[in-house]
Structure formats: C-alpha cells, structure tokens
Image (cartoon, rainbow, N blue to C red; front, side):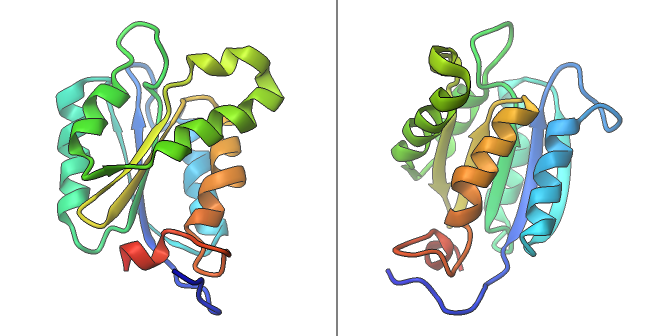
Length: 168
C-alpha cells in the first residue's frame, strides 16, 4: 500500500495500566497523549485501569467495537513483576498480531538500556480495524516507542508503508 501525500489525522485513545498511578501521577499516559496531539491526531480519551486482565479487556473492547477509534496506545503491565498482565489481556483480542513491533521495540531499546530490554513484553496487533500498541510503563519506553516506531506508522505520509490505510 502506498503512502498518502496528505496527512490523515486518526482518532487515538490511551490506556494506562497500573495499580498505583492516578491522573496526578500518570506521566507516561500524559506523554503519549502529548505525542498524539503534537502529531496532530485526534486525541479521544485516556483511561487508567488497574492491572487486571478483565478491566484491561473491558476498556480495549469498548474502543475496538467503536468504528471511530483507529488506534489505542497502552502503557504499563508489559514486564514480569507482580501483576503485569497486559500481553495476556490483549493478545486474545487481536485478529492479527503485529509481530515486528515487539521485535523492533526491543532492538531500538537495546541501544538505550542494553540487555534489560528482554524484560519488555511489548506487543501490538489489529482488532476490528483498530491497531493497538502496548508499551511499558516508563516514560523513556513510551517516548522510544512513540518517537521511533508508532508515530511514523500512524502517519499517512510515511513511506514505504504505514497502518493508516488499514484503519480508515
């Protein structure tokens, strides 16, 4: 699929997954919201949920079922500690997994944090014409994922390909 010559703004939601964060402490969710707005996409909504498989699925399913939501960015719950359950919650919802996202994220992240990147279980996939990118909860990881990968893949002008044609 070829890239468009003009920018197509997408409708994007942000989901923060955390047992400890609230609106006053959700810096990674705020970072993603700022990235969406700075890229001139339409920010739709931000929700914070506890790291619980069913609460995560409830919010994602609502957005997946909404034909006006093109993309969802999640932050948190992708590690190995405590109740981290984002990959387990999200992957059953995918129609198709974007396998290369996790691989590329860890490759880019390796340049910043070395072998510690193996503890990131980032995933991405498509569900009902909605792309979902699941990032770790740190600000650095969210900035890396957004700036190095996601922003281009949600830009209709990015060549040789992007996700916009699959979402609109």
